[in-house]
Picture 1 (cartoon, rainbow, N blue to C red):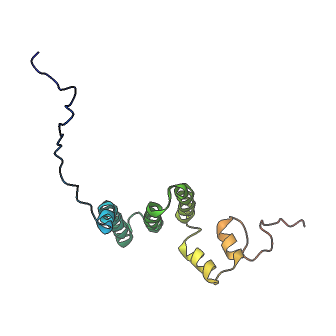
Picture 2: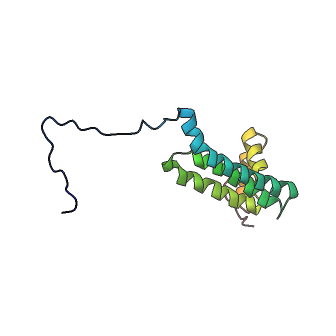
Picture 3: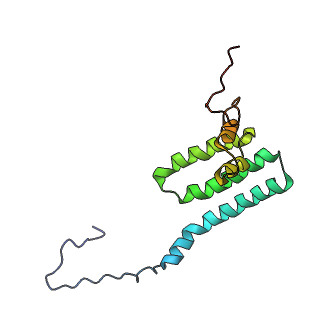
Amino acid sequence: MLTEGQTSKQVGEIAVAVIKGPAPVLDSIGRRMVGLTPFLAIVAQFGLIVLIVDYWQLEGLSVSRVMQLAFVGFVIHHWLAFRLRLPFFAAPSIVSVLAGVGHFGPNIIGGWLSGKSTAGSLLYHLVPGSRSGSSSLWPTASLT
């Protein structure tokens, strides 16, 4: 045979293994920054796109509103736990459709939450054909 392998050791023989030193351990801030850097790069790029669309009003006001909502939703979605991501993704999607139609925007929600608008006013924007301040949820037809 050309090569001969050793299958057993002598009883008094000492085995020596050469290993490299331990890998340098990054401190906790360094580890977080390594994972955070790509995310911050994407957030910066997305934020610049949103600012450009808003500043030059490309494609109109509704696209600007949807882009702003998508930007905030993207940042929040990244930090949520995995089990909460799908329900959270559904909520901004519904709000973006309503904001894109133009009947339901941030000023309507802000006015309702601050107390400047009534629930009837909010219902007017949510349900087509409903009247502001009506006592029932659906408009009723008069029987005269």
